[in-house]
Image (cartoon, rainbow, N blue to C red; front, side):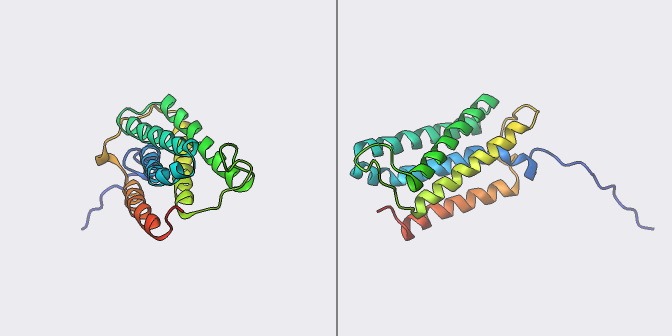
Amino acid sequence: MATTLPVSRTLPTVGSHRGAALPLVGLGSAAAACVHFVVMPEHFREATIYGLFFAIAATMQLGFAVLTLARPSRSLVRAGLAGNASVVLLWLCTRTLAIPLGPAAGTTEAVSGLDVLATSFELVIVAAAITTLRRGNPIPSLRPSTWSPSVWAFLVVAATAIPITTMTWPPD
């Protein structure tokens, strides 16, 4: 007579897809920062104001990524949500309405592979931050050993997509 083991009906929150949101906030920010660092020299060639924007955005996103992965807090996630949502809105405006400042003010920017990639990462940050904040429980501390497979998959895709996009659709 065979015995069967009981099946657990509860879902763990850390190390599951439900626990993927917070690491995705940090990793998405690191990925967006990498793209912004890649395009920064081209923007400095266009105008110092554009280069400075990308230098500041990339540095802030990288700092946010490190803080989120090392010492996450609800207020930090809120700040990252607001900052990245603002960058997405600015990207939409510069592609559909007009660039607000600098020598290209009043014109629209063409869409490129790297800016779509950075904006995609920023949308991951926004969605994952909203998911994280909607949960009433405290923000857990993160250890890579607790990350779900979907977080690791995102990391591999981001680490692959950035150099491939840079080589196949480089900044102008």
